[in-house]
Structures are given as structure tokens and as C-alpha cells.
Image (cartoon, one colour):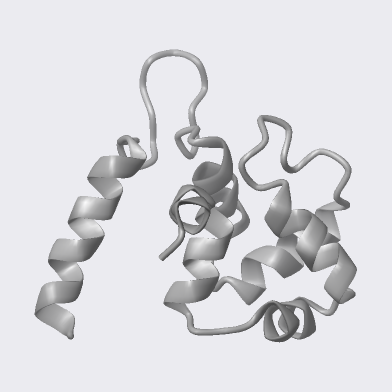
Length: 110
């Protein structure tokens, strides 16, 4: 797998679901160009800027995620983080740890 695909959480999630960009665009009811722009900017700090809320919901639906989880995946921010140091969401770990856990889990599920 190319290094870029590993670093891009949207491409990685799409690969986990075994769907093409075109299928993801169809599932989210957006054009292929819009999906590609979303996917190609997923590693940028402001990746979700410029997309309408209904598009974000559609992107999340296509990736079988909640909008909050999609935001967390892309921005690496905890779900429900209020800035108080207490989070209602899961702990955030670095991408390398996520990859190791995913590899470990896949070894048991096939």
C-alpha cells in the first residue's frame, strides 16, 4: 500500500470498506469531483472547511461513520472535547498506534 494511502484516513477508511471513489461519491450523493476534493484534502489542517454540513453528513454516511467520528478521524480531535481536559469521547492515539491495533484486530477477524 502506498505511504500516502496510509497517511490519508479517508482513503484508508474507503479501502477498509472496499469501495471505489466512484462508489463512495454515489453513496454520498455528491459528484466524483467533490468526493475527490474531500478525499485529497483530508490530511490538511482545515480539511473540512468549505464543505456544507449536508455534504459532511453524506461523506460520513458513505464511510459508515458518524459526523463526529469523521471529524475526529480527519482532525485527530477528541469527540466531545470541551477544552476542560475531560473528554466524553474515546482517547485519541497517534496513527501508528491505530495502525498497529487495526493490524492486530484484522489478524483475528481475517
